[in-house]
Length: 178
Image (cartoon, rainbow, N blue to C red; front, side, top):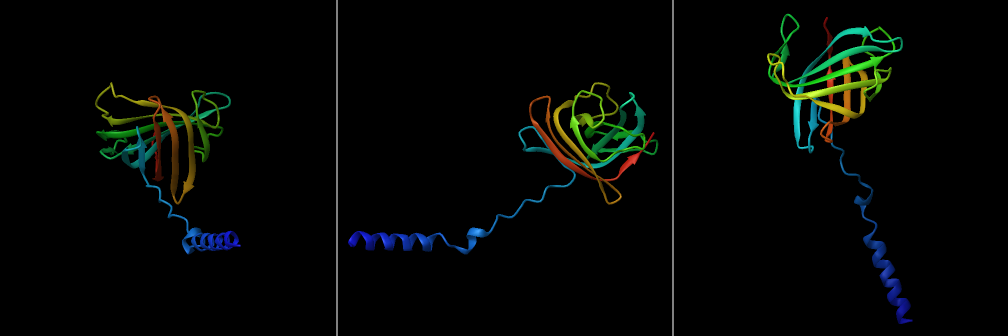
């Protein structure tokens, strides 16, 4: 009888300790940073301030390439549509199936120049006056392009040539230049 009494007291204590009001409260979600890309061990990052796309070119019967550059702090386009300054840059090639220009969708990072694929690279200290800038290529991953207000959301989740994660997003206009 004493064992049953102790067992009931034990069950009662467990039931009191497991029914807190905060048991059903989820931790707050972190808001992803806009216009920031992280690389390396995840503690390194750079801000981006703008993007532009070059001419859309048909490169095969099945693929049309659109080149997009995302500019980091320190870089800008001058009045002649040339890059000025020193800073981070992301160079992307999107392969779609229409000459209508930049297409939204999910692109797989690949060396194959086929529709729904993309390739890319980035430099942390790009200088347009130097011909030997150092770039890390994006070896695998995904890039999502979505219409956003009057511009686009470009989200990159990739692994670079060093085996490091490279991820982030750009929200904004993608100016067309030729």
